[in-house]
Length: 139
Image (tube, rainbow, N blue to C red; front, side, top):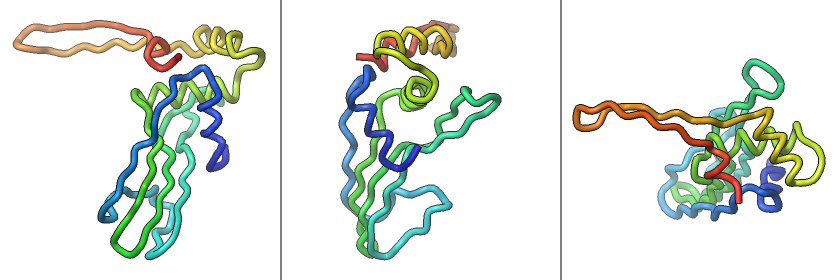
């Protein structure tokens, strides 16, 4: 996936999101392998890796466009809600499915399920609930 391919998410069945804008001192970092300039633009694509198989995607960092002028920065960060599940599901949708949008989503849900279970303790009482992440990340 090149630095701008992630923009295709805006023409997909995934929920649209607005990029976050940051203007201020240079605090928004780039991955360690991108050199930081005193003046210039950085275009960082979606960061991911595959873990156990070629379809087991793992999200690493959000795409970002950044302009740096000495100690100042303007950054546009493409970070959706539930970014781990959002980008992992999108990567599977983009690379491993074929057909119409509806057929591709059906295949995603079948072959790349995102059933999430949350558990913890609150006020001394244990709780646990489950949800399907696709309900939160699809239009």
